[in-house]
Image 1 (cartoon, rainbow, N blue to C red):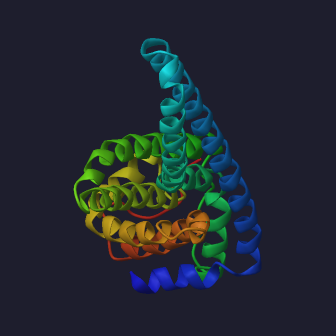
Image 2 (image 1 turned 45 degrees about the horizontal axis):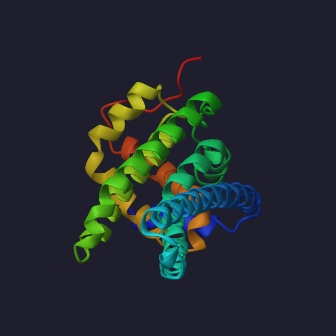
Length: 245
């Protein structure tokens, strides 16, 4: 597994990967900016409405204290938005991976497995659907994990475990679907769920590093291409082979 991770890391700065990296970083940055602006506008709208409601009920004499209170809340909300964007990075990476996964997987297969039959590109509609499903599931799971942040360290652990499961699941299935129909790729992932989860933990570590995590789609996809090759070579219950047209 570590060998597969090292191979994925070593290939990330190759010329073909750099091209995909620039595109994926650009798209991820745009998505994060859009999300941040939307959250900021929502918080500002809620805060403005709350201040007017309180002022109407408490009277004009509370105007100055309320201004100070909501100024403090605005600073806290800004810090919360930064944290929120960081927590949303795995979901954003999931969307980007659905669009650029095949380009990355193709480069890995050409470089490391030139004598083996190449995989077939996952239909863009299917890849996008899987990416959106994982992204939405990620947001739901992370929102469920937020209350645990109030318990010392528990929220971070829950978030990490959830990220490891979701990221491992998505990247492995996208790699496997180049060689299997979607149902068989999911069955293959379940048959090797322990290995896929452990691999997902390495992706979760990668995605937890600010700035560097913008390259998560490249690392996650390349890593899981190697993992899929190893697991099927060891005798997976579903034989590897290109899906029939």
